[in-house]
Length: 278
Length: 250
Image 1 (cartoon, rainbow over the protein chains, first blue to last red):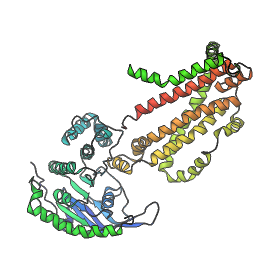
Image 2: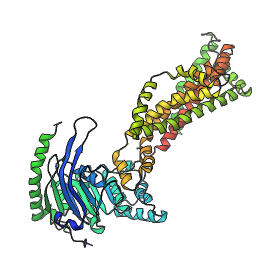
Image 3: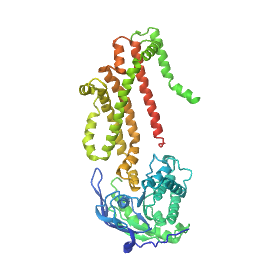
Image 4: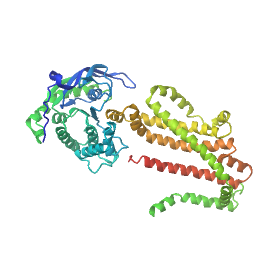
């Protein structure tokens, strides 16, 4: 098994080689009706090239919003977000995104979904057919090329979405609770698979989740976010040996999960108190 | 074979109705000038086809109906999609659509005649105006309901705004747009025949009115049944088309 040769960057202090730099970002969410909500307050974070960072926090803490800002889907109004030294102004194929609810084009087959990004990159037909097939094989969907998303299970849909994003080869992978809509077993399998895929085709990953185990298992660093307005409360290196299949039962893993859970718990309680509907 | 049996069983009530019609008329239970026997209506139908009255008037009607409907589909579909994506247009046009929606479109028959005269133009305009409303609303609602995650996915894969509109907004809007068109299809028949009945020298509506006023009731019924059948067949074919187009939905 090939392991990433690039050294994992240490965060803000090594921002010189960071691929993504988030500085002093504040974001006001303006719902169509009702009062504006301060979603993010003075958020700073750096992510190194080919680093895997998890954004962990209670629901409503603005972690997805931060991801959408990096993606260029929402405008950055206060602070700045730089990707490879340039401020983010719009979505682009250097940043691929995977959503919780898959966001597959329901009118396209698995193959056509995966081909879409390659067509937009104007890849020659023979080459893109070959590339699409190789990613279909990579995520284990061989034989389902001509199925529509409505005919697939949740896990298969998310595999398709991941293959679609990997296929057009973005440097950065933005993942918005990608396994949140899957059942517990599928979720575990997908985590292992993502880990393996990442080791074969290392990319810079920002992975949004509210699952502590998932964050520690997948990421090299975990950024714990506070309840709304979201800030980065702590950044913790997981230092978990991801090549060990039994790692989740190891003492160091369990301790790390405990340590991070303690940080998150306070915020989760705060977030609950703030929820107007409950 | 079983499928054929089931399909024909669905039309059994129609067959019973036809037999009842024939029986009621033959037994003189109602005045035969008010309800001529179905067999005589069939004979009159053959005469109308042979004499080309039905063919010529039918062609005129189908021409007006299809031109008006096609204009409404493209005009209304385009307008609805643009309104959903472009706020300024929405603000200006939406009140007009809402105002126009409950208006009985047949009230516009004299208006369109005043503008475009007694020929094809006034009927086409009427059908266009009437049918545009459900198509616009369908396209608008469908496009408004499109998932922003799909829009973002397409944009992040390198689609520009125009490309994204065509690749994401249009197919997202399609199910509701197609339903709007189905309503428009039925409306086209209604507006066509009623406008021809009132002011025309040609068309199905004209023929029904003419035959009725000259006492040729068998012929009148033959034309009415023809229009009913065409409306039914058009709707059925259209539904098959939708099913084929939306086969990605389970």
